[in-house]
Image 1 (cartoon, rainbow, N blue to C red):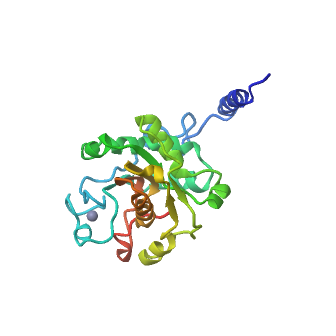
Image 2: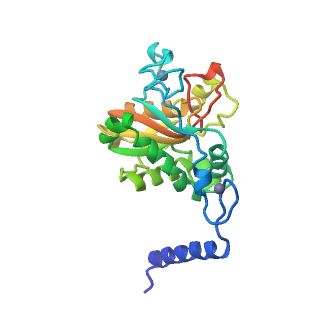
Image 3: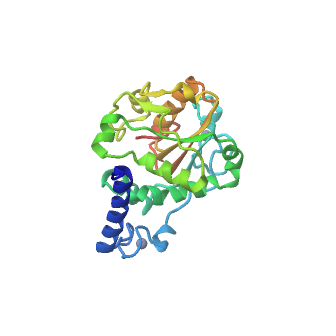
Length: 257
Ligand SMILES: [Zn+2]
Ligand SMILES: [Zn+2]
């Protein structure tokens, strides 16, 4: 009897190899044939500067333990947040391809920037204690439209590269929120409030949320609230990209979806 699972696994491996053979990959940056992201373009990604607030991860004029917004006690349930790189070309275009153009293959490739960010010395203490990684969830309906969750692809890549456990069943997005694009901080907060439900199994865990872009932080904060309410001990977040210009009325309300 044919083992269907193994057979389909072998076929998809064969198909992937065949597609690469018939259509050699081209760099998502410069279009040169050979790699999906060539070494030259990979080096054009700009890491987030060191002059950040160590808590919220926002760029400051100098590195600080707490920026003025973190210090004033604004609602910020995350233990710490970091973005791997600036949301500028070519990373901005690659994230667009990943999210809106069906380029799911870029997810694992772009995860290398998350892995590099996690290796930074100031994350060592956080990472040594992590119990697992959670991708920011998409609502089931949006997942059906897109076919995949880009944050999950990034998290899969990160977990493969670091050996950290991946948890895709601890957090669910129950409420279908409208796109965060064009919404101000208050509107984003209201849009994602109570959208997430965490499983009791996250009790006692120290978790790292993964998302693609750290815009106002509304999504990450809503995820963190749900996990902490369900008993998680600590929730941090790491995103791939940090926008360089954020409307001042939106500051401290940092991410999207
Ligand atoms: Zn290139
Ligand atoms: Zn801060």
